[in-house]
Length: 85
Image (cartoon, rainbow, N blue to C red; front, side):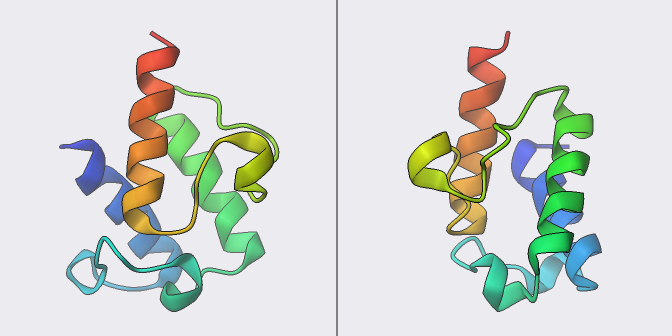
Protein backbone atom coordinates (compact mmCIF):
# COMPACT_ATOMS: atom_id res chain seq x y z
CA UNK A 1 0.00 0.00 0.00
CA UNK A 2 1.41 3.41 -0.93
CA UNK A 3 2.01 6.23 1.53
CA UNK A 4 -0.92 8.09 -0.01
CA UNK A 5 -3.28 5.14 0.35
CA UNK A 6 -2.23 4.49 3.96
CA UNK A 7 -2.66 8.11 5.02
CA UNK A 8 -6.01 8.40 3.30
CA UNK A 9 -7.12 5.19 5.06
CA UNK A 10 -6.01 6.58 8.44
CA UNK A 11 -7.76 9.91 7.88
CA UNK A 12 -10.89 8.18 6.58
CA UNK A 13 -11.07 6.07 9.72
CA UNK A 14 -10.77 9.14 11.95
CA UNK A 15 -13.30 11.12 9.91
CA UNK A 16 -15.71 8.17 9.67
CA UNK A 17 -15.60 8.42 5.87
CA UNK A 18 -14.81 6.09 3.02
CA UNK A 19 -11.32 6.56 1.54
CA UNK A 20 -12.98 7.40 -1.78
CA UNK A 21 -14.60 10.41 -0.09
CA UNK A 22 -11.22 12.00 0.57
CA UNK A 23 -9.51 14.25 -1.97
CA UNK A 24 -5.88 15.31 -1.84
CA UNK A 25 -6.83 18.97 -1.56
CA UNK A 26 -9.17 18.42 1.42
CA UNK A 27 -8.24 20.14 4.66
CA UNK A 28 -8.65 18.32 7.95
CA UNK A 29 -11.42 20.76 8.80
CA UNK A 30 -13.28 19.84 5.61
CA UNK A 31 -13.02 16.20 6.62
CA UNK A 32 -14.42 16.92 10.06
CA UNK A 33 -11.19 15.99 11.84
CA UNK A 34 -11.00 17.91 15.10
CA UNK A 35 -7.99 18.29 17.40
CA UNK A 36 -8.60 14.97 19.17
CA UNK A 37 -8.96 13.10 15.88
CA UNK A 38 -5.79 14.84 14.67
CA UNK A 39 -3.87 13.46 17.65
CA UNK A 40 -5.22 9.97 16.94
CA UNK A 41 -4.33 10.36 13.26
CA UNK A 42 -0.78 11.39 14.09
CA UNK A 43 -0.34 8.41 16.43
CA UNK A 44 -1.63 6.10 13.68
CA UNK A 45 0.68 7.69 11.10
CA UNK A 46 3.68 7.34 13.41
CA UNK A 47 2.88 3.68 14.00
CA UNK A 48 2.16 2.89 10.34
CA UNK A 49 5.37 4.45 9.05
CA UNK A 50 7.67 4.00 12.07
CA UNK A 51 8.39 7.74 12.17
CA UNK A 52 8.22 10.46 14.79
CA UNK A 53 6.02 13.41 13.92
CA UNK A 54 7.16 16.67 15.57
CA UNK A 55 5.27 17.29 18.82
CA UNK A 56 4.06 20.66 17.52
CA UNK A 57 2.66 19.37 14.21
CA UNK A 58 -0.47 21.43 14.79
CA UNK A 59 1.74 24.52 14.31
CA UNK A 60 3.24 23.79 10.87
CA UNK A 61 5.30 26.98 10.78
CA UNK A 62 7.12 25.84 13.93
CA UNK A 63 7.33 22.12 13.22
CA UNK A 64 7.87 21.91 9.47
CA UNK A 65 5.09 19.26 9.36
CA UNK A 66 2.39 20.74 7.15
CA UNK A 67 -1.15 19.58 7.96
CA UNK A 68 -2.97 22.07 5.73
CA UNK A 69 -4.26 19.38 3.34
CA UNK A 70 -4.19 15.65 2.75
CA UNK A 71 -1.52 16.16 0.06
CA UNK A 72 0.59 18.23 2.46
CA UNK A 73 0.41 15.51 5.10
CA UNK A 74 1.50 12.90 2.55
CA UNK A 75 4.45 15.09 1.51
CA UNK A 76 5.40 15.70 5.16
CA UNK A 77 5.33 11.97 5.92
CA UNK A 78 7.44 11.20 2.83
CA UNK A 79 9.94 13.83 3.99
CA UNK A 80 10.10 12.39 7.51
CA UNK A 81 10.50 8.86 6.14
CA UNK A 82 13.44 10.01 4.02
CA UNK A 83 15.05 11.88 6.93
CA UNK A 84 14.62 9.08 9.44
CA UNK A 85 16.07 6.28 7.31
